[in-house]
Length: 190
Image (tube, rainbow, N blue to C red; front, side):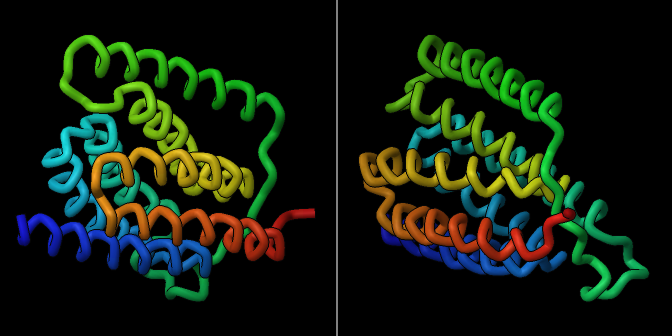
């Protein structure tokens, strides 16, 4: 049990570093995010939160994509800051529809075929977070609004499962999402 807590705390620390780097638009966020995802795969598997665990697998893959998308090996850190943009209405509609389908599918699978203690909440957070992560790779400023929603929902889920270090992490993520939105507005395309 003690080892589980230490692993969770290490995951929370890497998660905090990730969100700091994300707000600052640093490419290294993708590397730290991948490490955090690896740790949280184990944490959420142990807690029985299968959608949260699957979300970490997704984060791991997106970390590789984000690393490549935010700059090649020949670019230095200063060159990886990109202009933040607002998405087109058509992209918004398609994205939300895809997230809704993902939620319904995940909620059904978790409720019917797993012992997930909170399948609908777990599925909703996963669907919102997958979409938010994709939007981060595209530098859509709206990603922060989704993160505010997902992180607020996550607080209830993780505290109810006794994941206290993770609850603190997601509280900081919630604050970070507000700060990130404000910070990224400075880089928005006119």
